Image 1 (cartoon, helix red, strand yellow):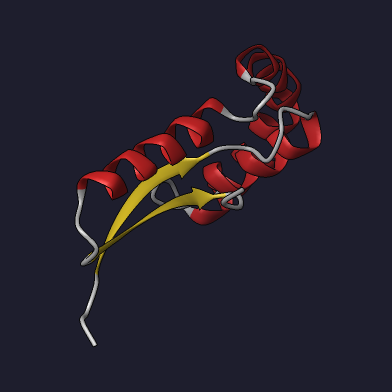
Image 2 (cartoon, one colour; image 1 turned 30 degrees about the vertical axis):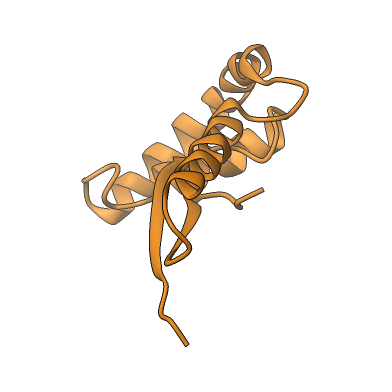
Length: 106
């Protein structure tokens, strides 16, 4: 049995859809990460949950709606294309995977 080397392509992530509720969930997950907003926990929770997410989700959703294609999130679409092209270039000893840090890998 031969061992395969996994090549992991990582990306920040994308909302599941451009709908306000999915954008809100994405922003909540992303901005509550202590590595993204590096301030004390309580201040980050107040800033993100009471100010940023409630006031930015709708506007961000409108922007995502402009970017979204019939096939979905451009970040996911092009990430999958890069994954598939890289897999074609590598031999059978490699397995290429795509992962998103925030939200689900669609």
